[in-house]
Structure formats: structure tokens, C-alpha cells
Length: 126
Image 1 (tube, rainbow, N blue to C red):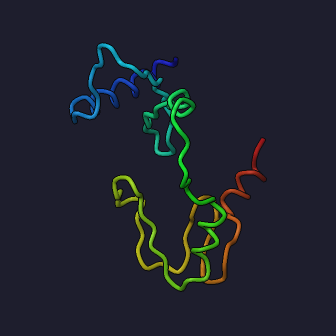
Image 2 (cartoon, one colour):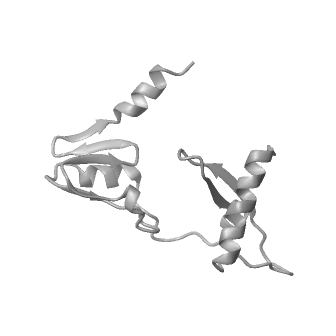
């Protein structure tokens, strides 16, 4: 792993240990790999790879709705509020706006539109 990424991982792990979110497990029944993911702002998000645990777990009789249903149900309203579900990060929250980005789409009273930033990224791809 690159030195820069290793330093970011150590920094994030120290923050999580200090906050009491991480603890050392001597004899864990399930072990999940930590996967570092770079964010747009240069920080590192520590993700857990729970695929093995998910394969061994019983399936849910009430799965989450499909993304297209969620996006369809939000379109055509006059005002929207968008929040980060996990921590209510103020940088990611907006209230009472006429349009916004939701799961890769732009939603507004006019309906669902393609996110122009995603189109631009594809057009400018080398």
C-alpha cells in the first residue's frame, strides 16, 4: 500500500480507537477485512467487507426498496430536504430546496433528470 494511504489509515484508526468505536478482539468468531476508500475531499473512509458474513446470514424477508422506486417516489414535490443518514453532516445537508441530487439523479418538481456532473465526467473521460 502507498505510504500516503497507510498514514491516512493509521490516522483514521487512531481516531476510531480514541472514540471507542474500535476494540481489539482476541478470539473473534467472524473476521471482516478493513477496506480503505478514498473520499473526494482527500480523507479516507474505513469500510468493512462483510460479504462472508452476509453469505452466512439468513436472508431478510423485508428487503429495502429498489433505488428506482425511492427516486420515483421523491420526484414531483415542490421542496426537498437532503440529509446524511448516518451523522447529519452539515456539509451534506440542505433543507427546503427546489432540486437536489439523490442517488446519482437530480430530482425536482419537474421529475427525475440525469445528473449533469456525471454526464460531464463521462464526456471528459480520457
